[in-house]
Length: 168
Image (cartoon, one colour):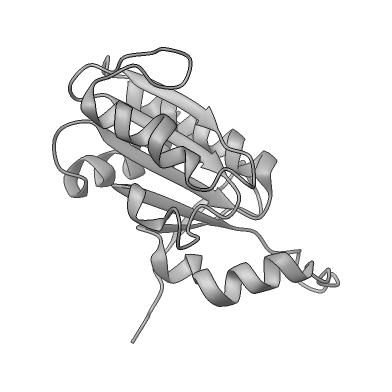
């Protein structure tokens, strides 16, 4: 029996999937969720898994209204090996892990080499809270579940599970 916990197992599996699918060079990963705190915690754990082998990892949490600034201020200079964010310069093979809400919106969608959509649901039998109009619109128009590289059911953050959606 392994002493590894479910979070570490999933994070390492996603890291390996990212490396397999994102190609070489500087890689940008987006961790998206309606719950900003969950996205940040998940992104922190993912970044730790990516960095286990010495890969240079940079972390940024984005505000809801980050929009086009992300491309010019972070992603483009990161990929070019130029100063970005607070003046960091990423070596070749580095990974930039960004988290926030609404990261699969049209203005940001093409920035990610790899992305994760975190879902979370209330326990069975519990009432479903009504989503604010902005979140309903985002889910309907951006369709983050279909746009993400990976879907993770994160209702229990101590036991996240990768979900394989059937989009047929």
